[in-house]
Image (cartoon, rainbow, N blue to C red; front, side, top):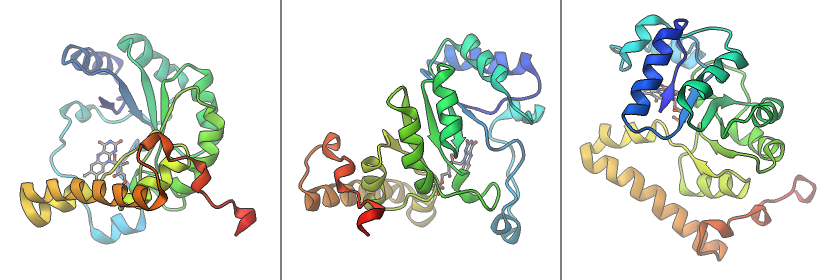
Length: 214
Ligand SMILES: Cc1cc2nc3c(=O)[nH]c(=O)nc-3n(C[C@H](O)[C@H](O)[C@H](O)COP(=O)(O)O)c2cc1C
């Protein structure tokens, strides 16, 4: 499940207990959105939140999260816990030292605040900092199968897709959802074919061009 931590611990504990009872197997704490996004683009578009999809958020989202909050989620859930919104290797390293299961490199699709680094730009340093102690997922701006290939080559364990999943149905209903995923899968398969690999495990950093060679 993906969790926003509210200022009310009783609410947090109830949400975690409900998620466990519903069979969720891991908790992702989003750490980068204590308030609605205010990038210039979000403001320009005049985006307004629809009715809150997560009713517990009527309690608000806690600002100034610290490691005690993360510890509470680990203790209450007993499940693998990841943090989402990691943009520095230092934070990724600390997350690993504190026993988290993984990190999600994300700038929230660039919608939260302007000036954050691109996920792709920080992914290699985060992978290096994690040193295989947990999983590294990445999202924000991944649109094509070749983007997925490059992220995997940088050492990501998986790639998250946000808005394309909404573009598909907006254009073509349920068939649009199917075609969004099918197109990504086809493009990834094509890129793998061109690269001469047949399994995801074979997508390694040997396909990356080192800056020194550019
Ligand atoms: C409509 C919408 C709702 C989202 N809601 C959440 C959310 O509740 N929690 C969260 O951590 N991220 C949320 N995100 C951000 C995505 O999880 C993800 O980080 C981002 O969309 C990835 O970038 P992309 O859209 O460029 O692929 C949302 C994104 C969209 C488009």
